[in-house]
Length: 187
Image 1 (tube, helix red, strand yellow):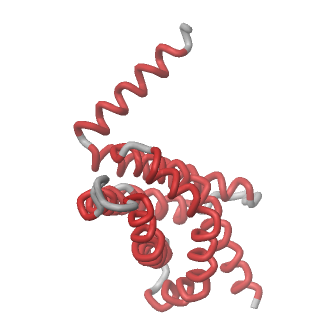
Image 2: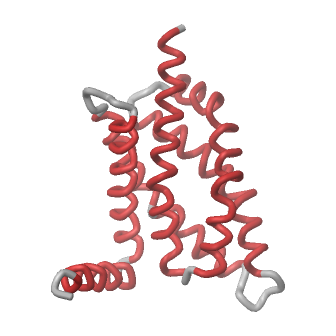
């Protein structure tokens, strides 16, 4: 029980920050998770030297966009589809999977490439080569998670859950982007 007290204190502090400063807390959380996901991906790939540009790009993206855009989207979604509506979870899932996710995946792939210092043309080329693979994988593997998130998780915690799942998704995306870059370098 002695070891659990610091954990409960940390969680209490986190939830207090999440309640009082939701955007800032979600942005910082996403920054940490995105950076950790990219770091993990690089370690799994066996990189001898860390790509600091990639780490920084994922961290900055998480800080500026990864916590804020989902926060505003889920807030909007709660207002547009109230719980009293017929089949609210399915309607929210429809909006999330078929409208938000395609736009957010494209935005993510493009902005990450730009934050890594790639030109507009290189970022668009990378977006074109990875977009369908990433989006279809998201639909295939993450739809059930989003269904559970929308049906079971309280609205205040949805972005946090998405970010925690995002850790593994970041590892996946970073790996796919690295494979695509290696394929291009070998040509």
